[in-house]
Length: 375
Image 1 (tube, one colour):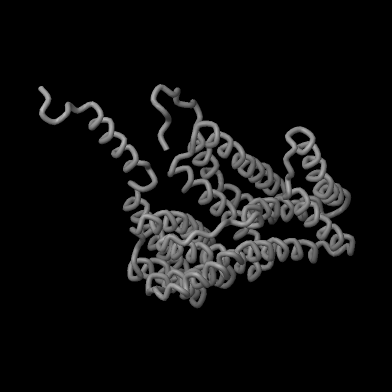
Image 2 (cartoon, helix red, strand yellow):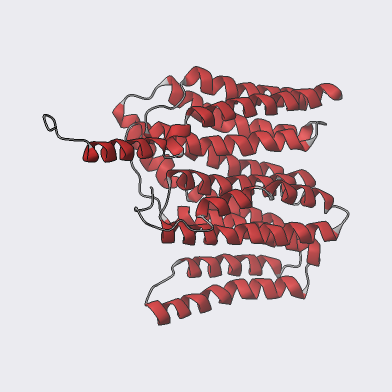
């Protein structure tokens, strides 16, 4: 969407904010790894991660104020998912959360994204549930809660956090209703979630409470995808045109996160190429939804070569020792990066608003051109 003629260009745009919050995300991962023996690094991860999460509200406000763009609509959910990858993968690798539970969360993300591409190609639209909208900020809140456990070692700080999580949303919901007569349903959901965690926390087993938090996050993540998995699949199957490209996307939606976490836990290779594969493929999923909407998504061969190829390389990296594991993991990251970079380059006209600008230019030229036969 382009601004109306004569509109002053804002000094800071929503897309600038989104790009800005993408830049420090790898640092959050690095600080989490450093936090195994240095609490200062964990504090940095918490503070910067919180700031990254808060910028989501800023770019949303700017997009509403100045108008959305196709690029912004693509980047915003990508930034959210990449942030989740850079936070939770180090959690799983360092033992803060169970790796297999974390893997389940990403299987859901990839699977629903693959289904959404199939729906977009067929103009099948499903209304996003409120729980699906709440899923992302639940995952982000979980990052802060999980990091605080090793930082505070339990005690009063965590209790105050949980009590704030219980009553804070209710107070905010009351204020919103008093000022704007608008009901914030998410407040009740947030309070209920913190009540459940608080009850478990009272047992005094902090390790169990952390695991419980992760289970709750993953459960919400999966439940939020029920509409897409059940309702949408019924519509897709009823059409009778499920094809190889759809099948490859769904198979890879399980294979990629499974191979990523297998390599993360079992391979002696460094974590950075493994995390890069997951983050890049999450970004690619958002673009694939957009390209599917325009009927220009990649076919089964190209999609399968990239995704299943990198998954096979990561699985192999988990089964060998020494330098071979490192080189296999790096090869997977290079294959993923090359494939994803090509897809973003190939689809640039669809998210850089080039076609919209070209159409506007043609319309403007037609409006100013002399009528046929005039002199």
